[in-house]
Every structure is written in C-alpha cells, then in structure tokens.
Amino acid sequence: MTRLIFLGPPGAGKGTQAKTLAEFLQIPHISTGDILRQAIQDQTNLGMQAQGFMDQGELVPDKLVEDMVEERLKQPDAKTGWILDGFPRKVTQAEFLAELLKSLGEGDEKVVNLDAPDETVITRLLGRGRKDDTEEVIRRRLEVYRDETAPLINYYSDRQKLLTINGNQSQEEVSTALKNIIAA
Ligand code: AMP
Image (cartoon, rainbow, N blue to C red; front, side, top):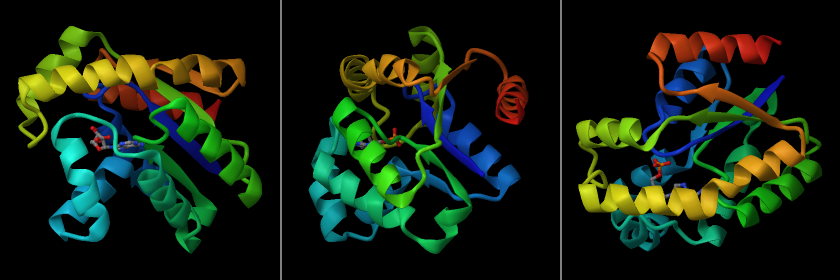
C-alpha cells in the first residue's frame, strides 16, 4: 500500500513525477492545484472562492482545501493508496491531514521532498506558460513556499516520514530515484 505526499517548490517537477508514479502504481494522483483549476473552469462555488488567491500566488484558505482533500480521500478508489501533490502546503494543513489519516486508519504515509534550486524552478516555471506563471506571481509563489511550505520539511523529518530526492536532474533520473526509494 503506497501513500505518498509530494513536497517541494513549485517547478521542482512534483506534478509530472507524481502523475507518472501514480499511473505506474495504479493509485490516484490527487493534486489540489488540479482540482482547484478544474473548479475554476467549471465555475463552481469553490472555484470562484479560490480564483483570486490562485491568480496572485497566494494560498487558498485552509478550510476550502481541507474539505476538498477530506472528500477526495474518502472516495473508494483512494482506499488502495494515493499520491498527494500540493497538499499539505503549511503546518496547519499537515496537522489536519495527520488527524484525518488517523481517523481513516491510514497513518503510514511517507513524504517525498523533491528539491531543486531557485534558478532551476524559475526557468522551468517561466517555460510552462500556465496562467499563474507570470514572473511576479512566480516570485510570490516561491516566497509563500519558503515561508509556509518549507517548514514542512522539518515537520516530517522530525516524524521520520521524510525521503529526499534531488529534483535538479533529468525526469528519467528522478523517476528512477523515486521508484528505488519507494521499493526500499
Ligand atoms: P499547484 O498546482 O500545486 O502549484 O497550486 C496552484 C495554486 O493552487 C497555488 O498557488 C495555491 O493558490 C492553490 N493551492 C493548491 N494547493 C493548495 C493548498 N494545499 N493550500 C492552499 N492553496 C493551494
């Protein structure tokens, strides 16, 4: 049973790697960013509440993403394992998730920290062309990552859940490193 959380700065390759690995393991890839972008496209209530924050590179309020993740993890296909990508993004969300997983009897998750230097992630993000990938928004997202998300590295390392992979190498190399780490 594989339950993995992908952590790392925007542009480190989390999305691509999480998706590929989830397909390989045949478990759901749960990306909060993807769910939110879909909600915006569908003009749902959630989408309308989230859009302003996302356009500016700010985090969407906890309650919105937490409800979303809880609902998703309770779906039947998530009983065979999952990869969470983009959640948690801050310590309060990690605490919420720990409680949720405990209540679901799923507290054996591991956290993959996919690290890459700023120059690498900025170049990758500028080349990606997503709506929230303008230089100003990218800078803000990196700041938010450093202030809010990076503390999760210590949070999970203190709890012996952290595995670190160098994201500053080719997609294939990261992919191989990932498969090795989860097989270990
Ligand atoms: P991502 O696709 O993971 O880069 O997420 C894109 C945007 O969605 C972020 O910049 C946030 O505005 C929002 N978002 C995604 N996941 C979360 C989360 N766990 N908490 C708050 N906001 C989030």
